Length: 312
Image 1 (cartoon, helix red, strand yellow):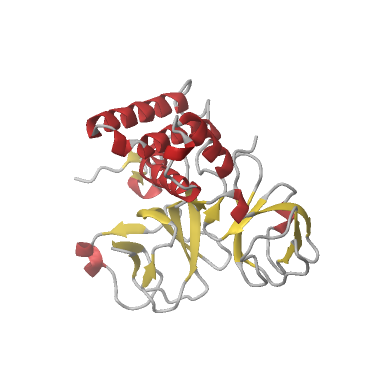
Image 2 (cartoon, rainbow, N blue to C red; image 1 turned 45 degrees about the vertical axis):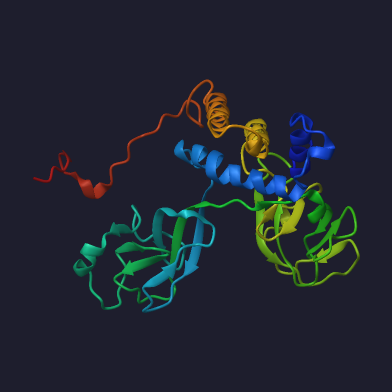
């Protein structure tokens, strides 16, 4: 079933036990609290399971002789899981990705442009060592992608139909204000797990009051009736598995009531909700893919002819 930001607001208002006259939080404020609870509580919980939640690739074109590249704009905690260098056919040059080097190891690599072998993390940038000399290559960052900001469904549009030839998407109602002939949008599937199927698509025309054209945008064949078109970096779907939404709701309600209770009581209630969420999600086998235990991966470079190479 679909579960949107509107449904979350309905559940919060139903279970918060606050009379309407005493509810001083707007819908936007409640959704902002939900965003904060996802980022500071539920996202770290899911990422800690090391089961691929929020993990996505983000690609940047290589510039010859340029060593510094910004971390992807969506990298939560300015963190990368893995860094790869792809050739012109999008094939990784190294099976194990680029090696992570410390600042003290910079002198081990040439300053002359060549094929990078390693990278150094530097605040908000990745530094390739040595600098690249091939502009046909691609830098791929595997990041934990920051989810879009929750907005009410009135700020988005529901797809009625899509013409994959002309690129015209027809909505179920007049498109929202700001949906123009040049606005940029993310498109989300209207069914669980509510995947983002198109990212940062720029409109090219508005042929009708309830239409937008996305000429040349790839991925339109994936769009179906019932999907949501949002502004870029916004979404109508909470970015957690639907089974965790009740705990998100409880966290929002506790946060709204924070000023009315003792800080210690508030923290205890938060911990109780988090523990229940963890227990519910880990019910049964503790792995996301049941029946497939994790394997330990030992890079080939660490394995000798007779087994694991021991460095003395």
